[in-house]
Image 1 (cartoon, rainbow, N blue to C red):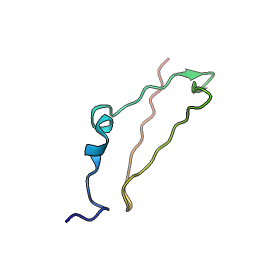
Image 2 (cartoon, helix red, strand yellow):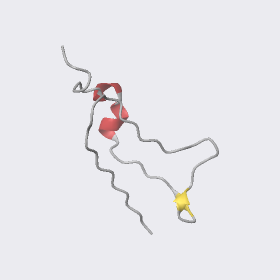
Image 3 (spheres, one colour):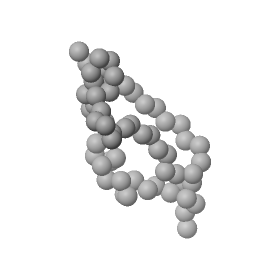
Image 4 (cartoon, rainbow, N blue to C red):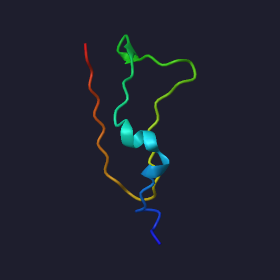
Length: 59
């Protein structure tokens, strides 16, 4: 039995395996999001994990 802190739950999130990037439009140097849209980063596993987030701007 695996400990939840080390279990791999990526099978529950198939988009995370196939889409490692997400393009987001910008307007006036800000994310162009709709009224009810937002950007969230969530770690769904217990424990401390090191993550790297890369933001690339074009234009």
